[in-house]
Length: 257
Length: 318
View: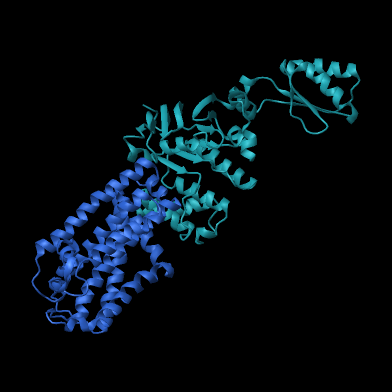
């Protein structure tokens, strides 16, 4: 167990160290969520005045709920880019050769992704609060929101990790990013689900990300949350993609790293 | 079962779709031995290393490293081996010291021993002064030395070196040879060394296997392999350049001609060194004056030529 955790911590340390000592890698991770928040919450603020738009914490908070999950999901996806780059440049070989238990490599990358997501979402939260967002969450709601963000990042990272370990090239970037982008934007991004019309409503209704997004917004507004649906969905996604990532690792072992 | 820090390979195979990279090779390496795996590019050397280091599963056969099966006991194999592969897996954004600390953590070394081990290895490979510089600015030789240090972090009993001196300057090459010899001699580390440099195999290896097109074509100590070839070659430069053709004609009576520099003639002596006196008498009888008269013992390249019909030296230079 000590060996496993030592390996995982080493992989996580490198992921975080590389990110936080290189402005070129750090800046996009911090700036993009802020840009999304400013663009959506600021530029579309009048959407909150639409008839039938009912959200007690205001449009800023409503959009924050989306951008928060988006930032955590893309934080996970960007870790997949790092994994693919490690395979393409040969550094993954060092991990595969050195780690007695290779599952620890995935855990290490995941810890790195969660660390980055923690920084990004903290900065986003501070900026949102400073610029006028007024959530109505209790301490328990905040704890639930943190858990939801972590599970979202975990699910996205494990999905991207599975893709990266199968394809082992940074050219796999679109295959990691596009599905996450689609499921995020096929959820009720700009208005509540009830106001979404047409085929998008049908897709958003069955889209598991809708449950996460709605749950996050409910936690921000201090409203009742369907814990089983929200956290059950998040845990199921993380669990399913954990299997996907592990099978990706086995694929990388079979084909050589 | 292989000895505790040895390697045992039995009918090992690896195929990639239609290509057979390694075709049923077998050998055994004793603990503390330096084993040279010699062959040209594409012969199957690196594929063999990848299988023995658990980076690639075999398609057939079996191999045990440090007593553990590479296919079913990968974690145990990895705990006992260190490897510096052909392309050093280094991160240009990390410093040398950070690499060593990272490697120590990856291998699960206790925190208390990591720093001391890092300092010791940096010193040993001569990178103390460059320890806090990013690896992106290291020369090829420095990267190789760091890669070797990384392979030694956890004190492995078996070390895999895949063409470790390719691209190194003579001094770096000599330093690395010295360190590899010391590891085997003083620390009892078993070394599996792949190379396409004959001199390297000759100087370092206790035993050599020659691999060609995925199969082992010869195996033994360098001396035994050269002894199998037996016949030395004789290279002679006449004191009068005009005698060169006549000299070559006389020498051809003692064996087939071999490549020789301009102005010289060379022959593979069919009768071995015992025929030298007769050659001298014959040249004297012909009145051919001599400038130089050199007897060359067989080289590993001669062995390679005899076993595969190709010259390895040409490929290595190319």
